Length: 221
Image (tube, rainbow, N blue to C red; front, side):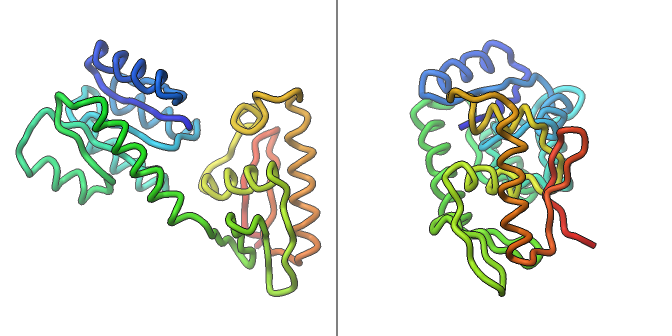
């Protein structure tokens, strides 16, 4: 699981990264809201942790821009204030949870686990065009038929669906799905073609567009 931590207090950001790394998470760090927004637009995260008070672009503004861009990744806001106004503003802007600084590392990890569980429970089924992907049964279906997906096809399909608002580089797909296996990046277009073949068999009105080794799941107009 990959997490982005955005906090202009560099020592705290590094300490948070160490805590999360030790707990088995892959972590990137940003030191202002603009940098966080750029990272989120160019990479794929399972959880985003945003400090509210940051230079250049604060956490609330970065959160609003992420939601405008269609990025639905669960977001935890960090606030140094105990007052309710910041929390309400953040939740209204689309945050999923918040923590008040200084926070306990056990509580942070518990909040991450809770959001992950909630997200997984909600996201068992996805739909784009006339295709439904059922993560629980590992199938894609249309009104014509249902076809089983292998484990790797399921991971690839879910990644494409979760990021359907943007292109995903072949290298990012490879790192997320195959980095720990004896394979190279050429395996990605191979699996893209497997899914494309299944779309054709289902008379799907969606396709995976390949733009110079960047992939995006799109409706066929």
